[in-house]
Image (cartoon, rainbow, N blue to C red; front, side):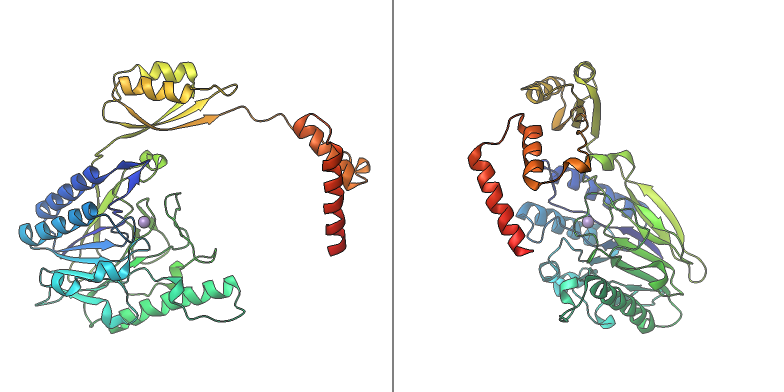
Length: 388
Ligand SMILES: [Mn+2]
């Protein structure tokens, strides 16, 4: 059995107000070719199919066009689960219909019966637990519960659910788990929203059941494996970089060869770069001379500009000079020299709050506060002191 693992497509994502539908179209074309060339039997998509719960008609159309071509132009089955960005109800709405086309969508699941699938259907050798994102809001409410207690309950629920799934799987099959969650040790970037639940870790490696062949995860956008288990626990990552700083590493899909017995062979396949993201760093002279180079056509650029002092209009000039050379500057981040260190006030001088306030005001506005302001401050101070 050959299985391909991907996740976090985020179709409909807009990058600094630019549509990415063309990049997604190219990715899905490439994916279809990859599935065909490698004679893949099952495609796994571990959540965050869309970027928002209510995707545009353009995004929805692209997704269903892909599913239709998958059905018509390959022999593959697909298992698609909802992530935290998807509306589970909306994603799963056409599930009965899609099942006729070998496409299995799981939006919500509270019982193993709802998400354990076996492949190939006629003579199964692999069981897959298609576990979607489990929302914390699905936990029943308990009064006076602390955040760590709630996080603990969430973690326990996930752990129990995965164990139940594995118990429910028919014996003798290779077991694969899917999930859209955060595992301790995972590398968090800044494009994964709502990454942790209650500030605590959703799951630990030791929570995963034994006797599993592979865990196909989504949620984190960098492709990487979590160490510490006897089998690969793998994040596929997003196929497109969702932030400029995600362009420093290649995006991947993972192809698994699952033998009837023995270990799964995992091969990573690099996803082509459909639109290059570049970060240009330097002072104004450096940035302007780099802008003159003939290398910007079709690229998205972020400029990190170092300035001695604020300079009005420089943002527009930079965008213009790159535009003349084919590049599209999506953001200019300006770095100014760090403020000179604040003067320390010796503790013995800090007798009265009013004095501290005066000093603060002088430092901030290079002036002394007027009478009305001082009176207001006194009143405020009085109010605070009465509270204490
Ligand atoms: Mn995601």
